[in-house]
Image (spheres, one colour):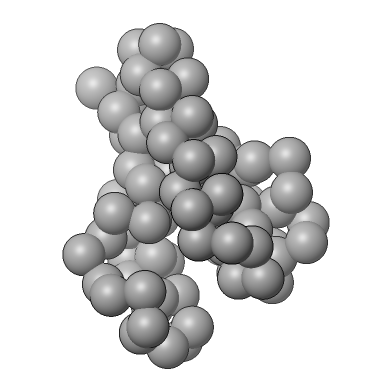
Amino acid sequence: MKKIYISGQISGCPIDKAREKFERAEELIRQMGAEPVNPMKSGLPDFASWETHMALDIVLLMGCEGIYLLPDWENSRGSTLEKTIAELTG
């Protein structure tokens, strides 16, 4: 099954709202017949540094065949980085 990484704004959003939108994206990806990879479920605590989250997120992204960009991805430097990495690695 094709794995799809979910990318969108987390920093600067209320954490419960961010979780909701990522979970909605998970459901949509499942409905499309793919396996969602939700970085909000990486196992890291919310209080871990942005850099720590990004390091693990990039590892998760590299194990996927595609990326799903949430509508607010452009408001996030992390999502911008993830999109660039996805484009550069195909």
